[in-house]
Image 1 (spheres, rainbow, N blue to C red):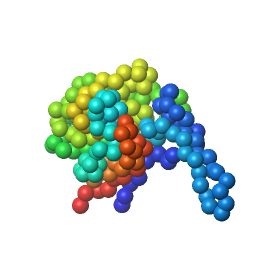
Image 2: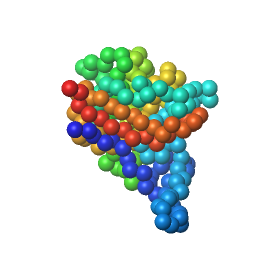
Image 3: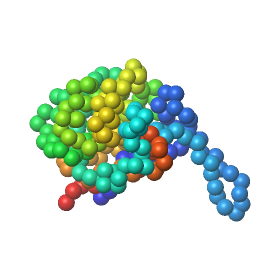
Image 4: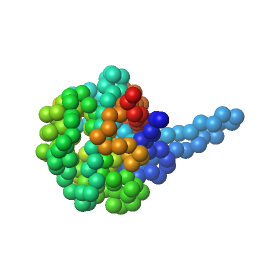
Amino acid sequence: MIYDLTRPITSGMPVYPGDPPVQITPLPSPPWQISALHLGTHSGTHLDGPRHRFADGAGIDAIPPERLVGPGIVIDARGYAANAPIGPEVLAGVALPAGLMVVIRTGWEAYWGTDEYARHPYLSAGLAQALVDAGVTLVAIDAFSVDSTVDGNDTAHVALLGKNILIAENLCNLAALESGVRYTFAFLPLPLVYADGAPARVLAWRET
C-alpha cells in the first residue's frame, strides 16, 4: 500500500503567516481547460532546500533524485503542548543509523484550517542537533514549520539546512504510519529552477 502524506492544493488553503495566498483560477480557453496558479514556493506540503535559509545554498532543482527517495521512520512526538519545544528525548530507544529520513509526528495536523495550527510544537535546538549528529538526510513534520511559527525563529532551519539536511513541512495522514517502523519515503518537489523550496508530493510505503 502507498500512503499519500500530501495536502491537496486548493484556493484559500492555509499558508504560513505572510506567505502568498493560494489561488487557482480557471481561464476561458474553450474547448480546453486551463487554470492560472498563484502560490508561494512553501505552500501546502513542500520541501525546503538549503537556499531557503542560505543564499549560496543548493536550490530545489539541484537536489539529485536519490536524495528524494529513501528509507525513513516516523518519530512519535504527540502530546506536547502548543508552541512547545520537542526535545531529543523523543529519540530515546530509537535506532537511527545514518542516512535515514525522519518524519516527526506531532498530531498537529488535526488543527489544519484553524488558528491553533500555527501554535504547533517544534524542534528544540537539542533535537535538531541530535538529528544532525545522527546523520539523517531529511526531516519532515506535520506542521507549518520545524521551528516555532508563533515566535518566528529559525534555529532548526539553520541547524538542518546548514548541514544540507532537507526539510519537509505540512505533511498529513501520518496516523496511518507506525512509529519506529521502516518505510520508504518519496519527497517529490516541482523542479523549480534556483528556487528555495517547492510544493511536493510526499508518499510512503512499507519496506519489504
